[in-house]
Length: 302
Image (cartoon, rainbow, N blue to C red; front, side, top):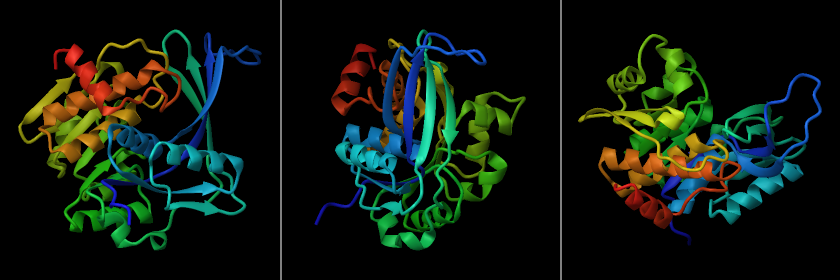
């Protein structure tokens, strides 16, 4: 019998079609791409792949369509060491697809998405034991399944980490069960338009989070915890594509939570992984192993 997972995640898996362009195209322009690739994507998928590359045992609960895209997503997740035994197949449906235009010079990107045609995972499609066998739960949205999973995880004393794909007012009922919300800057700005990121992290702490972070892209992240609030920088790398940098940060934080490190070490480690993931095209191509991160951090004097 295989050992239980360290991390279980519930979320959406996508197929990302990545196109590198010399600049963003104008209306009605026919442009020649510099490069093209396809990779699995989605907040949960990339975060769990990142954690698995670092050495964690990760299990994903998600739905894919009965199409070539779904088969591709499943195969890559399996190749990356993510347990796909609860990757649910919906006959007749189409999987989630995104087209990502990546600016060659800066690595910035624009994303066009076709949502999946299948229904979300239902609470009846997994058991309490499927969640509570792990130590950490990753969720990225509010629906009946994530709310039930988070409630079970909280009752079991697990750590719940959130990467919100919905605004605060929509996802607020979930926050009472979340220990570690790690939110992007645009989400923080929407919540408190006139306040700095540190104020948003501190508000999330006031609302019950143990650790709260706001990721700031190339400017790193601001993290609030019991000992205070601190900014942690991103690290300089040769940026090729910023796709998945935030997801890599979340995956690294999932892994770091398992190590029982202090918060500054977790935050620096996650920043290193997010930075390193920008070295190649796509959300997973440059995800590092633990030894690569350790070597990189040593070169930074950390």
